[in-house]
Image (cartoon, rainbow, N blue to C red; front, top):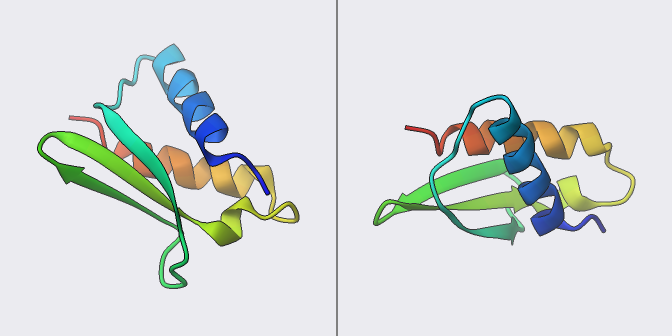
Length: 78
């Protein structure tokens, strides 16, 4: 299983390198949901990101996980 926090932080660094700065992310959580790949939620100005556990499976392409993380992180930009 892929390490969600590692990939989340890696994606933040890649966004920062091109001048995109998401707001504070309090946590990356693994979701059992089957109805979505990812979700960004804001509470009191701080975001949490949930990612489907299916994207973290070893047989799922890394590109799919990173694209979903980038998508969710972009929701965290003002």
